[in-house]
Each structure stands twice: as C-alpha cells, then as structure tokens.
Length: 316
Image 1 (cartoon, rainbow, N blue to C red):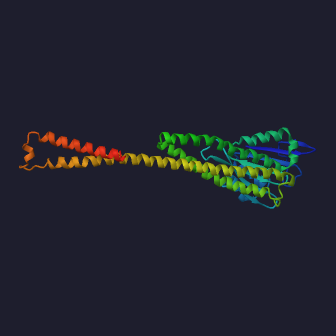
Image 2 (cartoon, helix red, strand yellow):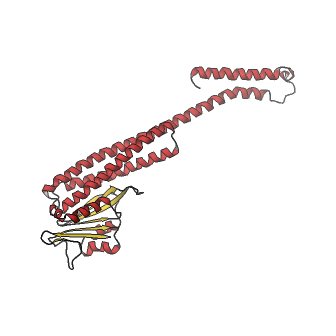
Image 3 (cartoon, helix red, strand yellow):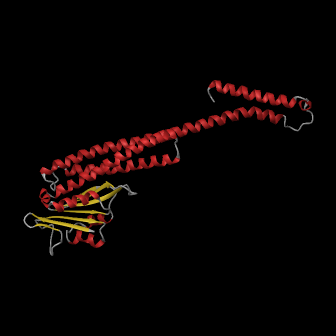
C-alpha cells in the first residue's frame, strides 16, 4: 500500500501523483509512505526518486541492525522500533530523507506513522517546518516504543524473581533466558540508533536545519536513557538467572546430602546383613535362639546412633 502527500504553499495539498512529477527537482514538499510494499511499488524508489539500488534492496530485505548511509542529495536510514505481538520483537522502518522530500518504507503497519500521516493530511502547513521535522516526529514515538516495552517488562522481571524463590521451574528458566536474549538484542539496536542520532544532531549533517537540531539532541538524550535502561534490564535478567541456578544447585545439594546420609547409615547395616547371609555351615549365632532379634536390635541401635550423630553435627 502506498500513501502520497504533495504540498505547495500556494497550491495546497495533493494526494495523487501528477504526470511527469519529479520530486527531487520539485519545490514542493513530498512524503511517500509505503506499507508492506509490492515489488512494483518499490520500483517507484528507483524510477521516480532515482535512489541508489543498494538502498532500495535494503528496503526489500531490511537489515536487523540500524544504520545510516549518506548519498549526494539524501540520506538513507534503517531504524527499528518495538512492535507488540511480533515474534522478532522489533520491526524495521526505512527512511529516505531529502531536502524537500521524505520516503518511509515499512513491512508492518505502524500506528505512530499512520497517526503522523493523518496529522499532516489535516494540517499540511506542518510541511513548512521541513522534512527533517517529519523525521523527528517519527523518531519521537519510535523511541517511545522502547520505553513502553521496558515499563511492561520491568514488572515481568519482578514477577519472575518472586517465582524463582517460590518454585524455580524449567518454565521460569525459559522465560528468564528469553528476557536476557531480548536485552542483548535491544542493546545492539539502541547502540546503533544512538550513533545515528548523534550524526543527525551533528552540525555537519546538512539535511537537518540548525533550528531543528535541538529536537534531535533531545531524542539523542532519550536514547542515552534507553541504553541505561537496557543495561539495567540485562543486569536484572542476568541476576535472576544466577539466582535460579544458585537455588537449583542448593536444592540439588540438599537432595544429595539426604541421599548420602541414608547411604552412610545403610552401609554398616548392609555389612551385618551380608555377614549373616553367608552360607557357611558352622556359624554359632545361627543356632542361638535370640540371635535374629539381637542382630535386628544391634542394627537399629547402630542406625539410631549414626542418625543422632549426623543430627548433632547439623548434617541432616
């Protein structure tokens, strides 16, 4: 699906592509949004905008790691945001940023992009703030998706910590491992997007107007906060995993201690039973009337003495 906005201060807003329109040479502001684009729609990027084929290919197969590539008149950005309900946790947003045009490409419907699109459709005068301000308006809610994810996940980690102490099961371990893997992935993504924002806020990046640079600095500071949060998130998940392994090891040690005590008590009893179980003809105790009960008594007394000794030592 493709959506197009073309704005001219005198002619107003248009949503259809005029014949012979050249957005890179036009004085009008252009925003093309491609949602789950078909191959023919992606061909517009080369036929209409004349973007580099490598950048267009990246839109067909988005990179997992965010990045930015600068060309003569435009820049190509690969960004990622958290998409609730997705197995991959994040989804890509590709952006072509030019002086008076911006193109957004994404394989999933993104609510914040649609909301901003409607806002510009209803108030096209916003285009006069520049295409770089559109990029900022996209980056702000994109960054907010990570804050929302961390707020939701923080409660989940606290719940898992409590469950680890109550009943450390295999299911709890799998959930902790999942959170830890997510923290590692998000740390890589946020680190790369921090570098992108640092470049966008840099004075040498000419596609961002000086008056709009402060907005990108604000998003950059938000990204630094996110990186601190993901580090905390990773540490909490790792500490929960260590607690699980420690508790599991302690439980195993307790079980082994009980089994060792039982085995130690049974060893002399087994020795006595083995001696009197030998098939020799001349064993005086076998003819004794009270021999059986005496041996049982000795075995019970020996087991009791050993059990008392272990208890006193705190081994059982």
